[in-house]
Image (tube, rainbow, N blue to C red; front, side, top):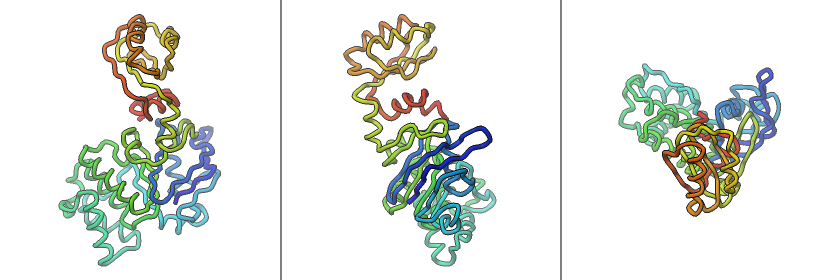
Length: 309
């Protein structure tokens, strides 16, 4: 279990993390979403003990990360954004190194190495030097190193960023397996589809604060029974947003190449929406979908998650 209570961290005048609280329970994947600068990585660094918090309490599996650091870190695994690998060593040799650092050895370590290599799909490549691996393979090995000691709690800081589809699937499946085994997982990502697929609970952060939290279903309910209309094109009259709002729509994005709105029963009012949009400029493409977490993210932060990276 990972318990965070009233966590705060500042760098000079910047409140990177501002009084946030949440609990990631055993057998649960807890998602942290937010644009760059929201405070996600700072929160992860505080939870892992890499950065000292200014205020608040962090317990890992019942141990305080500040006062009982050794005990807390024995229960914790961390997959950072930066790769923690030795390029000149093979995958197997990297795992032996990290396993030894965790206090593992002998047959126990070798059995565990083979298990994690299979989980991330690298068991047939374990003797090759890491410098020959693709970026996605390195990400998978980075993940394997963090779970060698079977941590009760795991921090995943954007583990799939920049990886190929095959590597992403290996990582997602390995994360779900850890959940089934009872691991408490905190997962940060810039991919909304990953959050919806993996996470039991989510916190959306912006400017160091928690601006929304709850289960996937609870967060979807904040959007309500509305559809999301995206109008791609070229718009010049950016002082006429009220023309769209007059249709009963909530405007999420309004810029020179994109308009996004939430509106009830989009199919019934699409003609009216297009008429108004074409008065503001030129519509090139229209997309209608059921409102989802991406809609809520835009509503709360003012930008799409894909643009927040």
